[in-house]
Image (cartoon, rainbow, N blue to C red; front, side, top):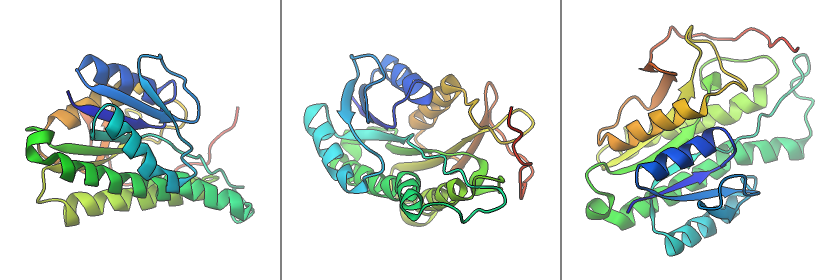
Length: 238
């Protein structure tokens, strides 16, 4: 039975992924600061702001339920900044946000690849190994008030692009930066659809071939290509 590790397992995308992959026959491990999901999912206490703890997380999951053939990095720090004074952010908070959005997923991707290597083609099976980074549109367009968040997501997106196209393209490993959009292609904020993410993620895992690394999708439609935008309108607060 294959193992999926979901890092950042909240009540939306994380919960939907745990339920969907469990129903598909996966052993499910979830990692977060507190257990928010059903106790049937093996939970590991994990703080995504501490990248140095990632190797131990993978060691424990591998020993307990098996080396993950699928890793979903779903943790994030929104990194809001003043729209007029984007540099007015405490340096420690800046570092913490970059750890969560960039450094920890970097270490997690490295540990995922180590696991894929250990499993080998026989252990991975015909669909190979898959690493999915839950992203957004900030790797492509600026959003006023979210400079630091965009910096972290952009770095993560480049890592995925590099792994998918320049380093691991000759191995049975797949890497995705997933970006859900509204039907008109606009940026999504707090209205992400967990079920849509889970459906798309399982589809990507089951496909043995690498699809578009920057996987932009719309609920009910799947992968969609939109014209590139350079900046999103300033958010209107209710």
